[in-house]
Amino acid sequence: MKNIELLAPAGSFDKAKIAFLYGADAVYMGTSSLSLRSRVSVNDDDLEKTIEYAHNIGKKVYVAVNIYAWDDKYEEIINQAKKLNKIKADGAIISDGGIVEIFKKYAPNIEIHISTQANVVSYHNANFWYKNGAKRVILGRELNKEQIKSIINNTPEDLETEIFVHGAICFGYSGRCFLSDFLASRSANLGDCAQSCRWAYNVYVEEKNNPGNLMPVEDDEHGTYIFSSKDLCLIKEIPEIINMGVTSLKIEGRLKTEYYLASVINTYRTAIDDYVKNPNNYDYKKYLNELEKTKTRGLTTFYFNSRNNKDFQEYEGKQYNSEYEFGGKVIDYNEDKSLIEIRNKLCVGDTLEILIPGTIDNYVFTIEELWESETDKSILCVNPGKQGQTVKMKLPIECKKDWIIRRKK
Image (tube, rainbow, N blue to C red; front, side):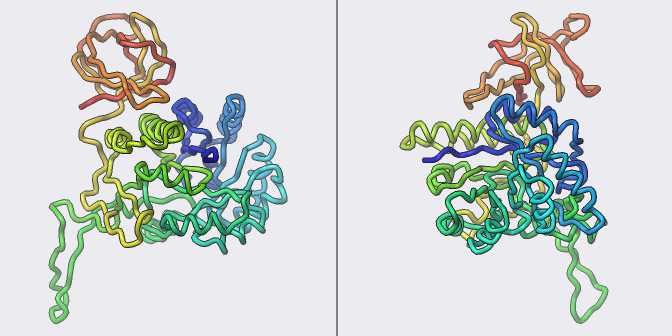
């Protein structure tokens, strides 16, 4: 078994710190306008701060520059390449061959990682990118395990492979989709996807011999989610993925909350470490149960085990978790009264779980008393009225700064 990287999304410096705290070996971030999540604005100062922080703790930062660029973008791309080379990003995630050439010229110290947007689904394609400077290829989600093995076995040993193991699946082919641009004038390939595949649609059929006579085709009173997919989850397949020699396991979600990141990253970190320690005693069900607490849609293995799998459509269009939610984040631990940044309503009597880095054995407790953070006045409930609002409560175990607390609804 070779060492395997757990790669996590980070939409900000604070999210990167959470990702590292809960076990990520590396994070990937976007730039303000050159990545496929342009609405997650990460400026150069935050990028530099994240990279410096990561390197101080022995971690890595990869930066997405994975749009398909028009010619008028290249001056900005050249400037960005120079900046990333200067602040020592560990890798650049790129889709466009033109941008690859720019980075080879202006950022020679940065590894080139070929984005999943480039649709690498064969070893012929992987070998092409290797010959053109790629250190890593991020394989298309559409591949099954036999195809992934074939790519690994038929490419140079020093060409790294990265696959997605958890998160949203795009309606388009490895993310190449024009639906958002068509319906909302927001191009997914320029980083501004409106996620039109998640919308509810009213679908009608027209009788051929009676034009204009439209009859609705509906799943329920809200319409039908004909494009929306379940989320990818390969927690059961972790042993097989590790043994086939994949370099990096990637979690999707630069738009996700700190709570989501902490829960999902911690689960995969624990699963990987547990398997490496004891390969004969891997029980995926306990890890899946933990992921179920965070999911907002159904989960699927997509095509990994079989290209005949059809269980990946999310017809209900769910975007919430009915049992658990983000409770808060530890700001300052004190044996008597700890300061908590709240994210949802908390009341005396609520059941909470402390997410402890390195284990999925969360500490469950009940709120016995709450105090206003400024006056120490005892209160029964607190509602999050503003960003950064805090409350004091007694925590049952010693907690570190930024530990995440989950609330059972």
